[in-house]
Amino acid sequence: MTDAAALDRDDPLAAKRDEFEIPEGLIYLDGNSLGCLPKAVPARMAEVVSAEWGGQLIRGWNDAAWIDLPTRIGGRIGNLIGAGEGTVVAADTTSINLVKALSAGLALRPGRKVILSDTGNFPADLYMAQGLIRTLNKGHELKLVAPEEVESAIDDSVAVLMLTEVDYRTGRRHDMAALTQKAHAAGALAQWDLCHSAGALPVDLTRAKADFAIGCTYKYLNGGPGAPAFIYVRPDHLPHVEPMLSGWMGHEAPFAFDLDYRPAPGTERMTVGTPPVLALSALDAALDVWDGVSMTDVRAKSMALGDLFIEEVERRCEGFGLALASPRDAMVRGSQVAFRCAKGYAVMQALIADGVIGDFRAPDIMRFGFTPLYLRYADIVQAAQTLERILREETWRAPQFQQRGKVT
Ligand SMILES: *Cc1c(COP(=O)(O)O)cnc(C)c1O
Image (cartoon, rainbow, N blue to C red; front, top):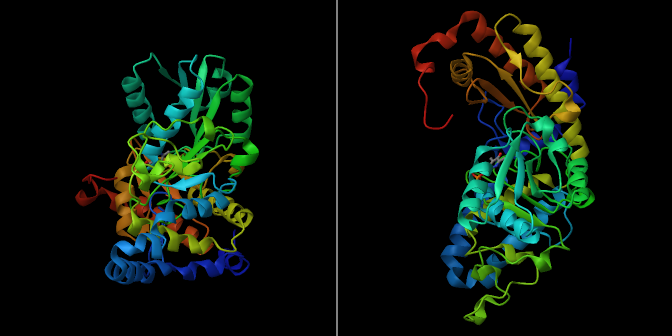
């Protein structure tokens, strides 16, 4: 049996937990949906609100360098995903950034009509692609294949291979470098959604030669509910990208107030309107927790936490109708583990009531996220014990656990 206490003693990331606000007695396995609050954030927010907004008012744009937040924070995120300096900006939402990147990619491949994605992609990504296709009205097609069939479906009809690296439900991880290479060999571009990758595992956009990448910061990057997202454009494409959302913040000289749009020379051209200073400031403070953190340590612990959870749940909960929906091999799994369970919704509600927070994804997926910066091995064992007790005692049958909220 695993000695969780010993693993926690030897954990090089153990001290990081103190940098987070974690409610007493709570085991939080949902950092893949909304990361915990870093302790540095409230004080920084109070300062920005009172001293900068309250005291500096309009002068804050220059004196507190609010205007540089999208590029400066973009640079900090870029360091975590292998992007070169000046190639990432923090802006808008993942959904909006998807359209910005995809419209740019399609324009770079004018003779081709296919956007290739998979059936495991997050629906929001697919909806945005469908909306863009309708708006462009140029005969593009969104082609969906099973995740395992993506590689063989790449051919010379594909304009953009549009994928999410880590499947939001199963945690299955695509091989970003290999699929990007395959896309390039077929003359296509590769666009990656890193929502479940940034802060969860090592990403090297430069080495993978990814053409575009997008992602959110409220999951593993702990930026807070609805925190601004990010967008990466490979530097050699940038001069050829004519932004579809040609906003004044992406203009070469916003304060020249010219009547015609001219894109900024750098990745700023991917920004649109006035940056959300408060939200960006929270994100900026939240990113401090990554200072000095080795992504190799994060990945090693993430894989170990996931393996331990699978082992504990399968041993304790055998015969209760749970089936592993995630890859067993940690190498091809992101930082989450999912189990299928017909009564999964009610079981998850009972778990949450008992202080173990995961989430549920229709139709039958119980999803558990592992955030190495603030979870302990002992938490994993305790979470599995709680799940076992709920299944044995059938507490999930209580009527209050059958009612569904707006957000699951
Ligand atoms: C979380 C997530 C999103 C969310 O996009 P928003 O615009 O922030 O709502 C999009 N795509 C994927 C793959 C996600 O995991």
